[in-house]
Image 1: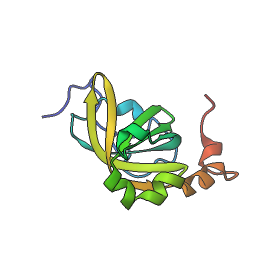
Image 2: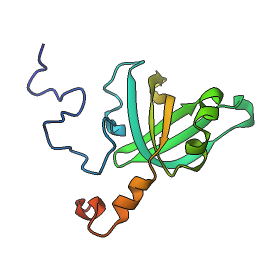
Image 3: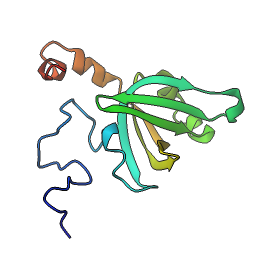
Length: 138
């Protein structure tokens, strides 16, 4: 079944120009489109780490907030996964997170299954003549 012509596709179409033209890691969904996949869907997101929290009352759970050019993404990292991806979780400035989508009370979270440090992509963005120089002014 094909979507109605006026209905946007549920996920970015690789055959069309990316409406969010920064050098996004492959298969990552922009924060603005996280309302489209169903509850429990496996998704990948990427963004700058703007907040890391490890509350004493959270039993080892870490909360990370990522920001991309379209918004913010809340990520939950369980203790066991933190131990596996500790270096990326602690020191990554820019992360790619793959996990399950969870919605509660109109708040969307990604329950992390994999965390990758993609901070080297920042160097490409900041390089003169790199993708960051080609982005349209806001």
